[in-house]
Image (cartoon, rainbow, N blue to C red; front, side):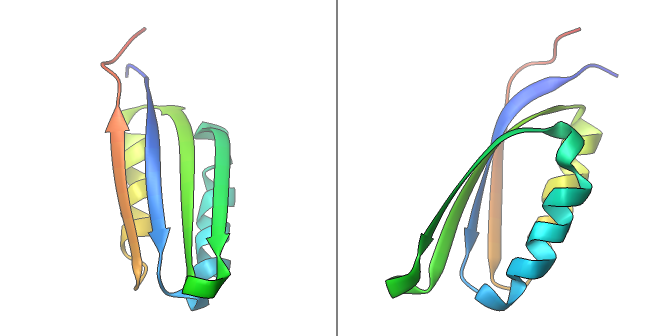
Length: 83
């Protein structure tokens, strides 16, 4: 299957989910090229951006698991496939 490069944006409004979120990210570390996290403590929210490279199935598995966390929103934008 062909790979894609893209960005995954995550907004965490439920800080109780951070341990589970970090576990999911660790489980999918093989497709994560880069990660930037900005905790906004005064607003009790965090914003995370990921640069990913993988198949649509791999990226979909990552975003699907993140999207199932309560109080966590996730969106992705992917390149066209390449060999």
